[in-house]
Structures are given as structure tokens and as C-alpha cells.
Image (cartoon, rainbow, N blue to C red):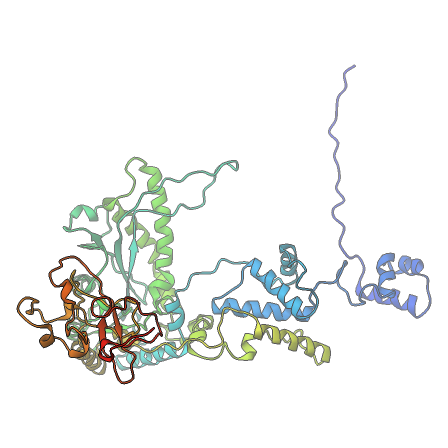
Length: 606
């Protein structure tokens, strides 16, 4: 008998909702049981409340205002709020916590509040994920790297001074309504190698991605104005001789040169401005000058370049040091997309040219296509707008960018209200119990071992060129005078002498009592010789042995090998004589902080 199986369709009822009763229904059921004496089962059936839920709430097993089933969390809502505020504060300063560090911090807080003991196991990641579900405003993210020099330099005061100077220059030269005359130039290093993107492959294996090996650096100089017009790129290749093949496949107007390292220098940057920038930028006149913004690298600042810019009606404006990530348009909205597009194009090129790969001759063609796709009018206009240059708006800079600088430049972080976690207005109340909880949590966060130190180290301000030109138009007379004064001061500074090394030099050993540095034999005058002059005539008497009156013992006079001579300084009151150990005194070793008398006193003791 033939049996035929027909498919059976299973209709899923779906997952029932978690709580099918309203808060008002539960209040009515609670009042009926407590106030009217209604049985639990009857009240449960009439108001559709689970029997166990109603029974536990009435008997006090769970809190009446509980919003979830199961045991209560380890920390109360107010205590977790202080933890959340502290986590958000630390992440804004640039010293955020990982998953494990959050669990350790919560464990320490629970121990501080007396809810756990030190011998108990720390909280697990299961607690962490439940904690994250209770606070959806938190999310695990990959932070962006921020160099410590940028964190120190990007302060509210520095940016405000920069915008004050910027507004003066734009007002002075009538540039507020001329976006076509406001340019930004920047450099970007690229290589033939690339980072493989995520690809589609089998789920059962980790696929390889063929990339180039170690490659040299090629620099591309990009420029654009606030109106959205991009200048053709300019490449700097590593090498000794420029070849036309390096620019094969490039877009129209692309220029290039070579350098020993592949990076820009003063001569190349000056050539770029005179030959490339002047050729494609808006013509500048005395009535309609051009403003050029760029970072204050030392290769970008020189008096001949400033003089040339003044003669050609170009205003050179240097951005504050280490602030280009928030103030330079090319870094904000152009070079980021350029790097991503270039990385994808290099990956595609490797697949289409598997046998040859990417070299110096094909890199320019790929980079030019990525340059044209990244430096679009919309991207350039958005970059100048987000950096607050056009239109001028200092509020365009995100205030969160100034947070890391407060750790180094002010006492904001060290203030109790900022180091501790202050509850938000949604959980703050006048209840004394909440205030007590807040005070205990605040005390914990003030005494906890956090990354931010209570006494940040104050660094001495250095006299560098970037402090003079940063955030200013260097073509102004006052700035030029300051640059000249700085260069004169640098010339007057005494140069550190080069240390000379001699194989016959005698150096005092570390076993001596004295800690003063002594002159070596190599520091004697160059025209002196042991054979034709006496050391007592060419050396300070204080640096000679008090017994033999020589810097080098007579026993070592004709020895050509390297010999280290041990010295010791006399500890007799008002006597600071030096003496050769072993050669001019029977003592061979003198311990640190021990007594030693030179032969002038006819005795010695340890």
C-alpha cells in the first residue's frame, strides 16, 4: 500500500507579550485584596493579574513599584545613574572604560556601598549586558585615536583666539563674502599597500587578501576653496630623478616632483605655491587678495616665502599647532573620504592586475581618480562650513573636542562636581535617602583610582616658532617682526659642543665618594701632548690628583689600551682634593657615603 505524506502546516501563535495587564488594573487588584479583603484567586481572575505576582506584591516579597520580574539589580537606579554619568564623563575626556573595566568599577562601587564583600567574585559580563539593556543611552563603540599633543592643544581658549584673529583678517581684506578667495592646502601621505576591506566569502574559512609588501611613501598635496573648486593634485615621489612615467594616467593639470624621502620640504612647498597654486588659483590683486590657510609645519614658514606672498597679494594664515583635526577643512571632510576611496580602488586594482600589482608608476592614476571623487564641490563646501571658516562660525566646532584639553589646561576635571558622577535631573529628588546614596557614590568616584590625575603635571612653555605663527596671518608686519626676533634669538643661543671620545681617556668610576663630573683627558687642549707638556700647566689644579699632581697616573703614561682609573674625593673638613685610587693611595675601593682622607692628611679610613 502506497502511503503519501502531506506537508503539515504549523501555525505559530507567536510570542505572548510580557505583561498583559496595565498598572491601573494591578492597583485595583491590590486595593481589592488589601482594602476589601477579596481572596487572591478571585482578584487575580477579575483583574487578569497573575496570582503569583499579586501574592508576592501584597506579602512584600517584591517591591510594589517593581517594573520587572525576578530579583532586584545589585545597584539601585540612582546608584547606576551615577555610574553611567561617570562612564560618559571619562569617555568624553578620552579615557573611557572597556567592558571588563566597567564590571570591575561596578564591583568596587558595590563593595564601597556595602552590597558585596571583597572575597566575593567580581561581577561578570552577564551583569554588564543586563546593565546595558537597562541604560540604552550607553553603547560599546570603537574610539578614534587622538594624539596626546592634539588633546593638549585643542582647547577652547586656543580656538577662540584663532577665530578672533580670523575675523579680523576677513574683515580687514573684505573676504567675508568672497568664498572663492579662501583656500586651504594640506598634504597627505599614501603608499602602494592597502588595508583589505571586508569581503563576501565562505563562512567556514578565513579568506586571504593579496596585498603589496613594504612600499615607499608618496605625498599628495591637495587644495580647494570655500566655493567648492578643487585644484589639481601635486605628487611628491621618493627618488633621485623625476620621470614622466610617474604621472602616467593622471588627470589634467596634475603636477609632481621628487624628494629623498617622498615627503615635502621647504623648497618643494615653495615651488608648489609659485608654480602650481599660482597657476590654477584665483588671480590675486591688491584690492582682491587671496587667503591661504595651512598648518604650521616648519617647512611651511620661511621669510622668503612670506615676502613672495606679500608681493603677490597672498595672505598666509597658519592654523594653531596640533589643531588641524578640528580646524583644517581638508582634514575634516576631504582626506578622510579620499583615503577610503583610494583603499577600495587599490583593492580593485590588485584584483584586475594580479600579476603586476601596484607600483610607483600606477599609483598616480589610482590616486587621481580617488582625489576627484573625494574633493567634490559638496565635500569642500561642507568642510569649510564644519570648520567654521565660511561662513565664520566658531560654534561650528564641536564643544566635545575641547574636553580632552581640560585635563591638561585647567582644573575642571579635578573639581569634585566633575570627577564624581552627578545624578541627572530625571532621578534627582529631595528624598534624604537618595541624597545619602548620591553622597556615598560621589565619595567613591572622588577616591577611586581613575586615569585622570588630581594634580596634572604643568609643562614649561617652549620658545618655538609654532607658538609665534600659530593661529595668525604670518604676512602681517607684527608677525614678521616676531619671526625675525625668534630667528635672531636662535642664532645667539650657544650650540652644544659635540662630545669627543678618546680611547686613552680616564673616567672616574662610580665607586668614588664624590658625585661631581670630572674632566676627561679628551677635554684637554687639542695641541697638548703627554710627551712635551706638563698636565699641571694645561689642567685646572682642582682636577689633578693631590699626590702626583697629574690627571693620569704615571704608570699609565705609555699604555695604549683603554684603562679606567678610579677616583675618590677627600671627606676631610674643608678639603676637596681628588686622588687616584690604587696608584696614589693603598685604598682600592671607597664605598658611597663612607669617610675617606687623601694622602695630604697621612691617613685614611673607611
